[in-house]
Image 1 (cartoon, rainbow, N blue to C red):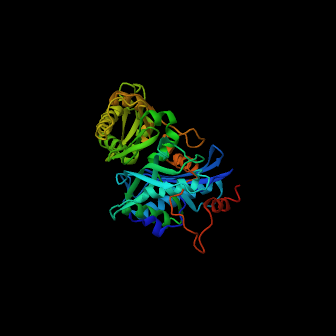
Image 2: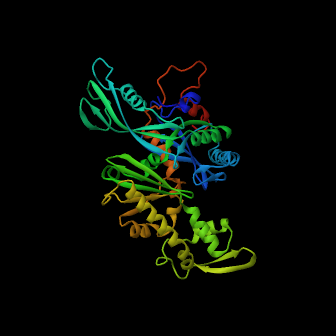
Image 3: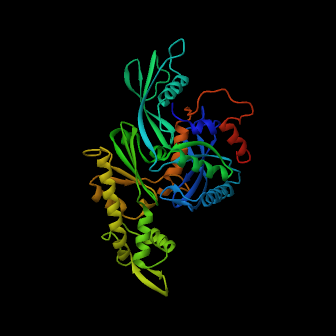
Length: 425
């Protein structure tokens, strides 16, 4: 039987409410290498409105891993306070994104008998079959993060995406079991708790991002979602409408920033600002008349630099990153043409002309995903908005055992969140 750190220590976590109603509030927390982001979303039916955003520098994070708990806790508190000031409310709970090289996918199969007398498949049956798929042996250092159904099977009929309401005797599920390092998860949990917040649930970031960055057709035909973050590059393959594989490369936008700092002999924070404001992914696309001043280390004089000169530093590093992405895709067993091409997001993908460079290096169609919500129309917010969308879309699922509530247990998640946001609503 798999160990259950989350179940033993955090039994009151609800990973998906039984249902969401009009005006429900969902808060997401994205702990990234360069930024900590809090997003407050209001879900009304199928509509999602972003009503609050908070950000803070990702001090204490290196290549997607927590290396300094105190700095990470302070950054989370700063982001939360920023979001709270924006909407004038107090945040106590959030869904937290999980990603990194420690994440792994394992195939599993669950089988249950339909319980209702009339043989109609209910949400309880779906929950039970997902729980059955969770029963597997894991090393003590691994922890189950989530169960992602690939397809349901009702009395031998395959390819079912949602069996609720169907008639049958035997319900099966083919699923991916997402596991992660207990140490990494524990440290993330510790940071959030020390920041005086409760965790409503953990959400795998590639799944979250896919809910806003990809269309159903792209997922069905086959597409590669690439998160070009500051500390790492996460590659997610979607096939037949479901997540088929995840891999993480230990390279990201920080490498580009360091190259600029070395090449222009300037400070790292200055290099980051220059990259964001004047960076181009290809020398051929950079305008020759765009020039700017760069302060030099050890020298009071500023150097005059052109956008084309800056692009000569950026382009080789991005070429290397896309070469590694293409090689990793081949290693993951994705052969031949990818019908949906590649979809980029993350801070690095905001670099001007990066889609053109990626198309050339990956030999496939490429587009950059940008969330279409006021206040977060930035590709680096895809993860945060995606968490909210994913939770709203999968609100009927639970990832905890069906046990009676303990005496003194906290009330339902939505009721608690509504009470916290009572003044706003």
